[in-house]
Length: 327
Ligand SMILES: Nc1ncnc2c1ncn2[C@@H]1O[C@H](COP(=O)(O)OP(=O)(O)OP(=O)(O)O)[C@@H](O)[C@H]1O
Image (cartoon, rainbow, N blue to C red):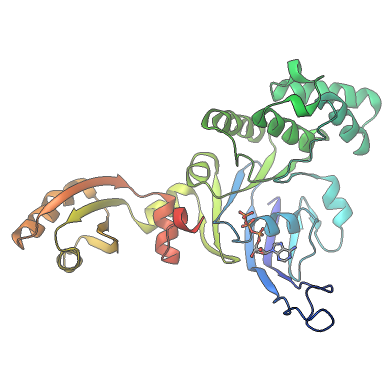
């Protein structure tokens, strides 16, 4: 395992004049339990995702594992070293790309990469070779000598990731790498992250995009309110929670829900507004029986759709909320 974390916790305790009741008369800021006992195991050479809505504790978890935030509890081994006892050793073996990116707007990609390489201990000759390598890997060669402020959002994001990789860390942390990118740039970046994994780099990324977690991650944890609510491969999670989902619009939602709950093959029925979602193993076979049961009770079907379960269904099942709404 390249990361083994146990019971990681972080409580932010706001301090300072504005956080204290008293001198300035403002209300005391409450401590925020951002991460409440997270465990995760990341294997070498995999893309591991931390999926959750805004405020779930993803950034705090990543920043703790990258030695940038001190945990208030728990233990972790990262890239072969104890996070708390040997943060310097950990730091040397990781790359970290935060949400803000860390790209100097007035510097060129090439100059930024050279600097990052030298700061990380590469010789001038190694830095030149390595800079050319990462520029090529991220399709940046023709853009390498323009100031970063003239690059598009997607191009800048690629420079940011290249900066995190220039010293060849075996483990790369990416905090919400595709937020704000258009679909085409997102898809390109997914391909580049997969290529990194295929070349042997382990990647831990956070995301609030369901499709990203599904398409990109070998394994993931779903976090909510600072806790892991589900862990596994995307396929395992979807299979465990619900094979197929039939969503229906019916006259008389409450009565329809009662009828459907009585059917032996319906694992679970959930109502959301005027839409009913029925979770079952084999949707195609069940669908005609389901429709017959409803019409048999005098209920009129307005629409019906058969879908495969998504990671949103997993989140809904575990938390009672949709990740789409929560995010
Ligand atoms: N420095 C800080 N001081 C106080 N509270 C903080 C601090 N940093 C984060 N928090 C709080 O901790 C909680 C978790 O925040 P975190 O940024 O880890 O979540 P996140 O899942 O990464 O969210 P997002 O997707 O919006 O980035 C939030 O309630 C946030 O307001």
